[in-house]
Amino acid sequence: MNSLLSMEEEESSPWSPALSFCFWFGFAFLVIKSCICKRRKPHPEAKTNMASSTIRAVEELLSYRFKDKFLLEEALTHSSYYNNNSNNNGESFRSYQRLKFLGDMVLGLALSKCLYLKYPSLDPGQLSLLYDANISNEKLVRVAVRHHLDSYISHNISDFRSKVKEFARAARAVSQEDDKVLYGSIKAPKILADIVESLAGAIYVDLNFDLQKLWVIFENLLEPIVTLEDLQQQSEPVRTFFEQCQKEGRKPDIKRLSSGENNIVGAYVDDVLVALGSSDQMDIARRNAAKLALHELPNFMLTKIT
Image 1 (cartoon, one colour):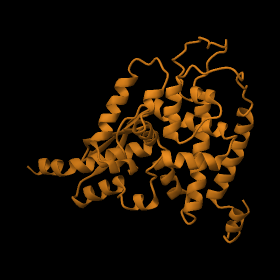
Image 2 (tube, one colour):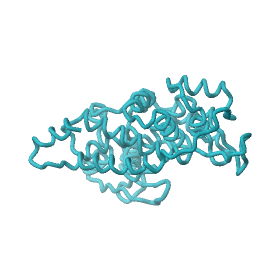
Image 3 (cartoon, one colour):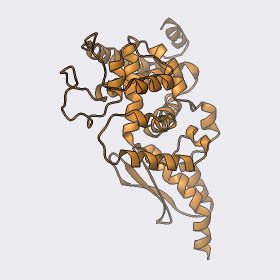
């Protein structure tokens, strides 16, 4: 903390927006931690219902061995699985929701700290772009699919397997390098992103709330990490879409068509719909629409000419 403070003392303002955000996030997280850490310990002779082979497989891919196996079982259990049943110790099962809540916060804090220290000259807007690229739902779902985490989830969701297969096929259809692209366009099943976050929460609790050790484990799991250099090598599709259209004397526009859990955006040229983009984040939906429109522009321009 002292090193961070000494860095800021050299600036004209004692509190930069980025550092203020880190302090606010850290304070909020301490409050959340104090509420969550009061967790009832399982009976010392109690055993999880998860197969030992599953436990070993997940621990191997995480490169981490849980002291409390119940945390791992909880992290991989969807609320649909038990339907108010009780385990063989007479206790109600817990779904991953609490650990997902914790993991969402702790991954955000760990990544924010990493980016803040790695890129001391970036402004908050640039830091936010890197943050979103590395922790978006699609990014986390790609992580889950790449490590086959869907095989270890306890659930009773009828169409879960088909959704995972659909996403995996779409992900394989694009280049491997797209794992590092900010502007992905694939609809991702959110439960897989939830599982990655719940595992982060479980490991964090099992590590007795050691943020640094958690990041060492999860930084490897999240590879490839999107870097500033990756972003600089990519053109911003919305800006490029507008520039190309205006260069040809056309009128470009991007309109929001629907919002909510999945935002849908249309890219228009001369009031004609050229492409659609979607995402749970509006900014990424706009970029997806612009990126797809850029692929369609040559054919659109040719059609208009003829």
